[in-house]
Each structure stands twice: as structure tokens, then as C-alpha cells.
Amino acid sequence: MTYSIGIDIGGTNTDIGLVSSEGRCVARKNLPTAKYYDADLYVADICKKIREMMAEQHVDAIDGIGIAAPMGNYYTGCIDNATNLNFRGVTDLNALVHKYMDVPVTVSNDANAAAYGELVYGGAKGMKSFITFTLGTGVGSGIVIDGKLLHGKTGNAGELGHVIMIPGGRLCGCGRKGCLETYVSATGIRRTALEMLEQHPDYDGPLSKIPKEELTSKDVGDAANAGDPLAIKIFELTGEGLGVAMANAVAFSSPEAIFLMGGPVKAGEVLMRPVRESFKKHLCFVYENSVEIRVSELSGNEAAILGAAALTKAK
Image (cartoon, rainbow, N blue to C red; front, side, top):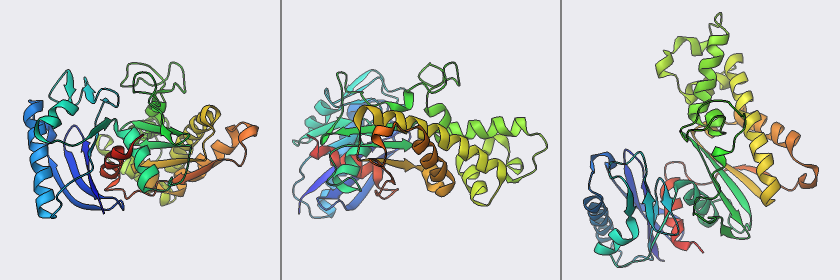
């Protein structure tokens, strides 16, 4: 059995895992990303945690280190001007890690890492072409075609969360209006809920009892699963939009499957039913019955680490 390291860099915390070749996370440690303003010190502390894990688990060697990072660039090994990190500009993670450890390093963004995790350790094992959508604060996506992760010219290919669904629609963090993620992410679901509550001032269901500033997409999912009509409608609108985007994505890659992951997906059938209905309605006939819609098989609390570790197997 061999081992690799998976590192998931978030704006608040950094999770580090020691992952076996069987896809089992045998040890984990974390660092508070937000306290670091010096990238060199940050990477030095990450490498210290890695060595601690290896010693504790009696692992003498690792195959490599995979890093899932905001604005992580597969080609350069750098983080390119991530807005949610305190160390600004271009951070050469590859070079910094090699100051402290002599192992192969692969860097990519978190959505691409999730796709590779699904390929290596999850439900996409043995598949040649598939797409993943990760619904979180935003919408991430990863595209695998003919067994290879799609990077494109810049290393940032496959940002399906930023396809424009409604021209002139909701303002997105990218500066444009109407992007998919402003409607179907956890944040987008919350925005839809707040709009619906304003449109229905007489509504007195469970969502009306939650202070607006505290309302979350999970609250909407819980209410929908409890049978609340307004919450069900919110998820129907969400599923409709996501299904359209998925049907459009099939047209350029003809995948075997589309995998969905992230917090809103945990709501279950209140989301998945309208997603499947919308997908079927909007799918071009030439792809009929050729694409599975599946929920990710990666363990939710380990998915990011497994995805990062899977990058060490990237082709």
C-alpha cells in the first residue's frame, strides 16, 4: 500500500490528510489559514504537519502532495491572486513546498480536485467522460473527457458556475450578472428564498420564523422535506435552473454521468427530482438515455481531501 497527501486550502482553514492508495483518509490535521500573512511560513507549517502525520502513522514515504486551492493553477503550480487569502498576488506553492519536502506536487482548484477524487476514489471509477458539479458558496465544476481532466489554455477550463443563465440577472462575485452560481449555489438558494419571502408577505410557514440574516439553504431544504410549499417551490426553481445547465453541458462533452455534490444536494429528492425532470426536458434528443445523474460517492467530510490527494494521480 502506498500513501499520498491531500491538502484542501480554504479561506478560513486548511485541511491536510494522509490518504492510502485504497482511498482511505488515515490521518488528518488542519491549520487556520486566516492567521497567515506570510506564504512561506504557511507552507512550512503545512509541511511540518505532514511530517508529523507520517511519523504518527509510521509512513516512511509518500507518492506526492496534491493541493486543492482557490485559483490554483495546474500548469504553474501557483495560486493566482486568490481574494480570500491573506497572502496576496501569485503564490508559487510548488516551489515553496519543494523548499521543505522533496516530493512531486500537483496543484489545481478545488472543483477540479473534486472531479479527480470522483474518478480515482468515487463513483466515476472506470469512466472515461463525466462532469461534476459542486454546490457550495458558489458552484464549482470539473470536466473529465476521455479519461483526462479538462484544463484548457489557462488551466481554468470548466467554470460552469459562471455560465450566464439569465442575462442581466443577479450580480455575481465575478462581476457579471446572471451566472449559474447566483441561482443554484447554497448562496443562490438563500437569495431565492429571501425573494420569495418578500413576494409572499402573508406566508407564515417555518421559513418566516427564521431571522432573514440567519436563513440558510439547509433551512430551506429542511422545510421542503417537511412539506412546506414555499420551500418546495424554491427547490423546484433551483432544480429547474441546474437541470438546464446540466443539459447544456452534455452538448459539449457527451459524458457518461453527471455527479452532484455539496450541501444543497444533501436535501435529497426535493432537489434531485426537479433536477432530473428539468434535465430530461431540456436535453437534446441525440443524448437521450445516455447520461446518468448521480450523487457523489465521496464521503462528505473527506471529499475535499480525497480530491486533492487524487491530483497526485493526475495525467
